[in-house]
Image (cartoon, rainbow, N blue to C red):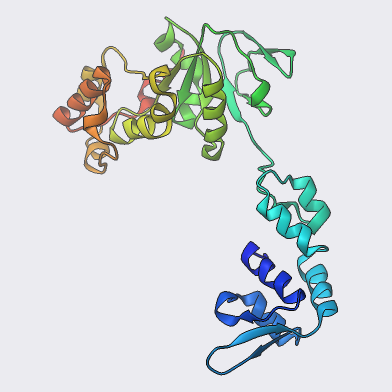
Length: 285
């Protein structure tokens, strides 16, 4: 059971001798405290709560919720910068913290990229079958001539060597969209560097929506959508009608200013097909 900020404040007021309206303190924890004869509910119509035994309440919070100091616990919940270490000291439970233990994002490359991390030299060139995870992304620096390629699907990200032929004109560093809860970290990093962003995703309405709603809206003119030269022929020959029938556009067509995106949407609507980006993974002979 987790003690919410609202109920924690209610308990603090009860400790200070206040009588609290029952309607403002509805929770399973409150019911448990009443059953334990720590709190008392009185009144028939306008019910209210009073504290019976402060010592018993503090023992309950310590034993059942590992909260040793209620006021410090409330302060930590209200402070968005509270760390997991601080919560361990207060509650002996780091899971209360708003700080994520695992920040950062996955990167991959088939060319050698000389980068810096925490002011130390970092050579990016993962062995085939492995990736590099950047944790301290705030200190992660790469050359300005590197284009960041965001890869939507995990299969494409793991097989970038087999898609090298698509990116002959740029020096790419590949970023995985998954795990998706790391995406905010990538956006923050991308906004802090001058490098351009190229989105490599599925060629259907869902893929375009991911690009517009997750990347373009944050990166603006730095972002563009990768579209192969033969996309019309590829969609016509190898596209999947189900990819078209089962998807609806989750973006405002009138707000799109990229001609290439508008042309792609026209092709998708004309052919009534969508194409998975996995199609462009070519096995090496």
